[in-house]
Image 1 (cartoon, one colour):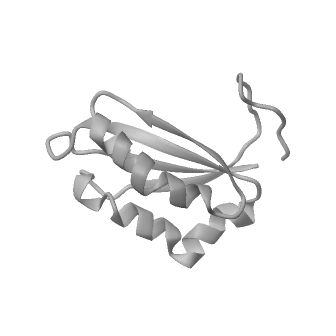
Image 2 (image 1 turned 120 degrees about the vertical axis):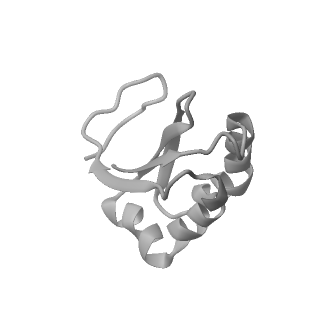
Length: 107
């Protein structure tokens, strides 16, 4: 399993955090769920608007495919007016998973 981590900072003067999360659910989550190899996501948001979106992918190739196809940039563009700065992005191999919804992990 692989993870793509996008670091972002929402400009809370332009958009309220609750509205930003709702927009994400409506505009981006359905497209994300339709991507081949998608295995889930976690969104983290601090009170200052800083956060991370962790998307999980079955393979490294699936995690990279959205970057090559332009899908990732299309999704970022939907929020560009609400970011304080362009989001950062990193890729990781998932080496540990634990929690109530974790059934199995393949590395």
